Structure formats: C-alpha cells, structure tokens
Length: 514
Image 1 (tube, rainbow, N blue to C red):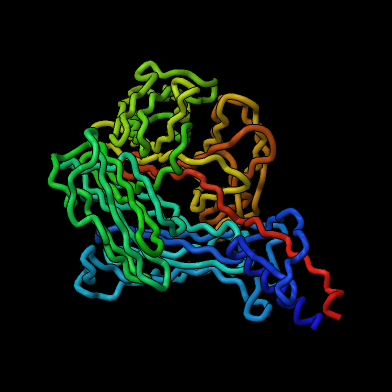
Image 2: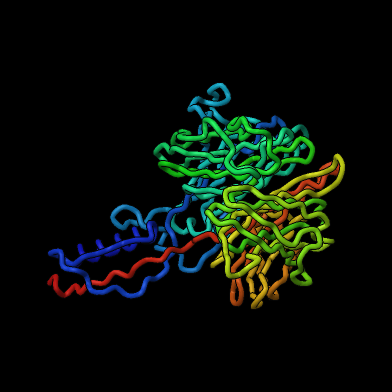
C-alpha cells in the first residue's frame, strides 16, 4: 500500500511538471494536508511550429535546433515515462502537410521534401543544423521531451538571393497558442503578406483572422472558421481576405475556436525585401521594441489598441547614451480598434537602439500591441526586417543560428535600476567551446555586443541571455548577411523560454496507510 501511494505521488508530480497542475486527496476522499508553497520544476515537454520557409526555387534554408544547458533538469535519463519509467529525451522536427485555406492540399498534392538531415538534438548545449532548399521545403512541427524540453528553440533562416521575395528571412519557430497580434502587416499592392497557420497537434484546429486598418475593421471574407488539419500548415494571403482599399499598415488578429496553432506572417515587398513578422507581446500599457540597427535608414512604428479606450503614447529611444525623445516623433495617438503608424526617420543616428512606448499620462495606462518595420540600405540595395514588441526576460531566453561575423546582441534596460545580465555563447554546431560573460546595463540604456563568440567556433552558435539582478531586461539579435551589395539582415527578439513551471507541493501522512 505504501509503495502504491508513493508511485501515485511521483506520477502526479511528473504530470505537474508537464501541465503545471496536480492535486491529491487522501484515501476515502479525505482532504490532503495543506500543501507547501509551490516549487518550480523543469518542463518535460515542449512543442514548436515552423512555417513553410519560402516559395522561391532559389531559397536556401538552415534550421538550427538547440537546448541550453540547465541545472536540475528533471528526472534521470530525461523525464518520466509510463508508470514512472524514465524515457530517452528527444528534440526532433518533422514535416507538416501543406493545405489551402479551403482545406485542399497545396502544391498539387505532392509530398513535401524533408530537410536533408533531421534537426534532432540528443543532448543540451550544442546546436544541431539541417538544410532544406527550394520551393518544396515544408513546414515543420516538433517536440522536445525530458532534459531537452526546457528552453528548446529552433531558428529558421532563409536566404533568397533573387526575385520578388529577395532577402534574409529569420524566424524563431513559435510555440502553439490560441491568440496572436500582428501589427505592421500590410495589404498594399507592393506587399505580399501571408499569415501561416501551422498545427503541430494530433487534432484539427479552427482559426479566425481579423484585419484592422487606420479606419477600423476591414470588411473581410473567408476569415472565419478556417480549418487547420492536424500536423499541417495553411498559408493565407492577407490581400485576398478583404475588398477594402489597400492599406500600408494593418493589424492582424489570429485566434482559434478550437485547438492551437503556430502563427507567423511572411512579408515580401517588391522594392524593399522580405522577412518574417513574429507576433507582438500580449497587450500592455508599456511596450519595448529592442534592437534597431545603428544604420537603419527608415523605421515605421505601427501600434493598435485592442480595448475600448484610446491610447496616447510617449515615444522614446533607448540608446547607448541614454533615453531621449526622437525629434521626428515624440508621441502617437492610437484610437481604439484602429491601426496607427508613425514614420521615424534618422532615428538611431549611428547607435543601436530600442524603442520604448509608455503612456503619455501615467494615470491613463492603455494596453497596446506594437511592431516596427525597419529598413537598411538605399535605392535598389535595401532590405527590411520587423521588430515586434517583446516582454522582459523573466529567467532565460535563447536565439540560435548566430554567426562569427554579422551578429549583434542588443540588451535594453528601461529607465530605473541597472541590471546585471549573463550572456552565454554556446558551442558551435561544428565545434567550439562555449563562453559566458556578465554585463551590467545601466537603466535607460541599450548595450550592443558584437564580440561574444565561442572559442574555436565552427558552424553557428546560440546566444542565451539570463538576468542576474536589477531591472527588467529586453533583448534582440540582429544577423546581417550582406549579399552583392544588399545589406540583408533579420532581427529576432528574445522571448522567455518558460523552461520551468510552478508545481504545487503534494503532502500526505503515509502513516494512515499502515
């Protein structure tokens, strides 16, 4: 009897590490003694979804899969299996079927080509890469278990050297969810913006898409009840969803009626280039958009208020030298339910910076979502990237696929207390020794790091950021890969990896079972 009860308690604790919830009662239905304060345990399963990387025949895509080294990452051999038996940890990606918004199979029903090698991680601390080139590269879904689950991340990087989708496209593959906001999308004639809905689960999902322009809701069709079959992806061209006049700045809201999806917007501009637009952080009265390159030639801010109150926002630039109000625009009025935008020329003036949005009147905080469209270069040699508002890093965050040259890490701390931050460059995918350093970032400043590279690096590496003490920390990575005079680049913000979960402590007096 004692042995059985102990197994039940162990099983419930393992379940809590996955779901974040567990409860126990004593035999006979009696309430269990009052539990201790919750503890944090490493998650034992994580899932991600990567959209179709490109429709270009000349696209070259690299996937980088990585799990950072953690202390105390769960049970022996990686996690709890059936009846408490340990299982071998695994982090693996698999191809997803491509379907149309109406449920039909895309690309004539052809089976997608999987990456040349499975991006399978078998141990924390070293990136694993895989290639998938051309227009038939599929969307990918995957999961990580046991010791590979906490902090598992996958970076999808695509180079399109020519054509209408020319550019360097980067995306940190996202966790499935039920609600996404995308400011800075567009239905303009020169833009081809596709929202990609990818379902990593075993059951079908049903999604809705709403579009908001400068005058409010855009009349749309075919946007409700979009089926996303299990283990499949559905691309939807935004301009086909509405008969309204083309809009330069549109906010897209994706929700699910049932199930979960990964969501991202692939944007291609005929003149400027292409990249991925990731979802903005959840609506909040303060927004930080980190990592604007020092040589940005054009920056457009797009903001949206989901609630019923208008927002008056104060715009500030947080740079190496401090926090200032830009000359080009110091404030932005955002009407409820309408997309607002502001052009910010000559914003960074030669320094890596971050945009800080706060209520003009602190007594009237209004939640907003926001994103930036950033341009580098001039004339025919231009490229774009997007920076969504991101949340502060609570414990740890990682971006993979960094290169020996062309990687810039921006660390931003809003006005207030300084922060100490530990930054780790992992081993390389082909070899190298990881290195770490602790950086102090003053309140109201942005610190740019370009020299943190693993010793003896071969291949690409991951950057992991961990706040140590002090104020809130926001971060973004810029990867620049110039090609034939075009300053190709992409920017990924750091999102907390939620590698641990709060688990209620379960108590029982086993003496009653004698």
